[in-house]
Amino acid sequence: MPRYTRRKVIEVSGALLGGIAAGTTVTAATSGDRYVVQTRSETPPGGVEVVHEMEGVDLAVVRGEERDVRTANRVREYAPDIELELDSPSVNAEVPTFDASDYEGQPGDFLQWDKADLNVPEAHGTTEGEGTRVAVIDSGVLETHPDLAGPLNLDLSRNFTDDGGDHNPVGGDDHGTHVAGIVAADNGGGIGVNGTAPKTDLVDCRVFSGAGASFADILAAVVYSANVDADVANLSLGAYPVPRQANGQFYGKVLNSVMTYANKEGTLLVIAAGNDSADLQHDKNAVSLPNEGAQALSVSATGPIGYGWDADGDGEVSDLASPPESPAFYTNYGTNAVTLAAPGGDADLDAIGTGVPYFNDLVFNTVFTYEDTDGDDEPNTQVPGYGWKAGTSMAAPNVAGAAALVKSANPDYDANEVEAALKEAAEVPEGYDKAYYGGGYLNVVDAL
Image (cartoon, rainbow, N blue to C red; front, side, top):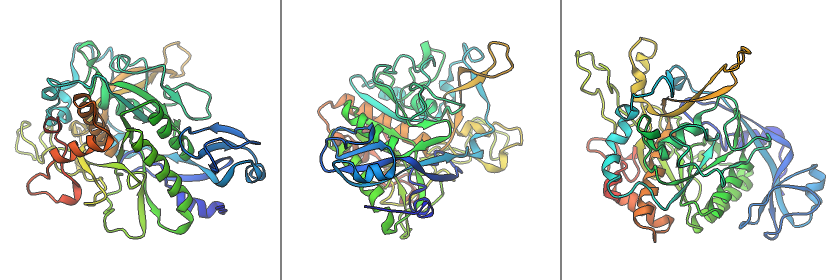
């Protein structure tokens, strides 16, 4: 049975699941009363409160005193759950947002360079994701957003945290709402934005409560996604570096067990590669998780510089200083650590704060803001809107949506065959280093 001091758990596993956009920092603490347990059978342990059963794997999440967990029936091994706190990245902090009323009559698709570069409108001539299901494991999806209300499956969406709420986001974290829009926004009746697979069945699995997340809740959400027959699960979360010391074996083992189960059940796991500008291929002392876990389709990020603004100073806004397929400044890379590259947004850091619309190079999609609607001087109403974010968090759902289209067009494909179709269609752009692309840059139309 793993027995760790708090310091060792933080050193080995504190970054297991964390930073969700460029520049995010991660702090961690072990849970005082929640544990991930490996059981001797699929029957959950007795003598302790079971938080998540995780049907299909010999794992469970329980709450109780450690002495009770240690002596509980059917417990083979256990370790404390890991609680995480996140900081927002500066590159995403200064961008404007628009609420739905401000944006009325102004279709947002002209700002969606990512969908244009992927030829998503052409792909929709074949399929819009009908007959598929995509789970978004993230900070919650705002069900009142006009671009997400259609695809969102309220019956299957769940809150995996202990905060007592429903699947909707809490606090100001609209990360999951943005990710969900990249996958499945259905253009809100013609005035909003487009997702890659607007006809998919979207399942919201909320694992963040405000800025915090739990390793155990994420494991449970992956198993749940597989058990509700999701064809794809998007995890725009992860962290680096996680040391390769032996003390991390239990966490790595249960993560790989859950990911392998999901793949076997037909759920393709699309996971952000991380935003540390790190060469994952040649770092022998650390690993990035969960994108380097078993069966992960790991996604790096690309983006343009100069979309709709004069980045090269030649007086023209119609040209780009770098194309949408170029690697983003923050993306992790490594030939065998990355499966595919996809649009996640880039930024000219020198342009931030100069008054130019540098944020056009980020990914534009669904968000929300908080407003005071009852006059009590407290901004407590979530107002649907549109805005920009960058990160491998935004690249992954572009691939998840593409995977849904491939599955829709080929309903007999399993998870491995969907991934193979995406990889076979992808190519490394001429003149760029393969280390940033793995199998290549996402090509939705050819994958179909």
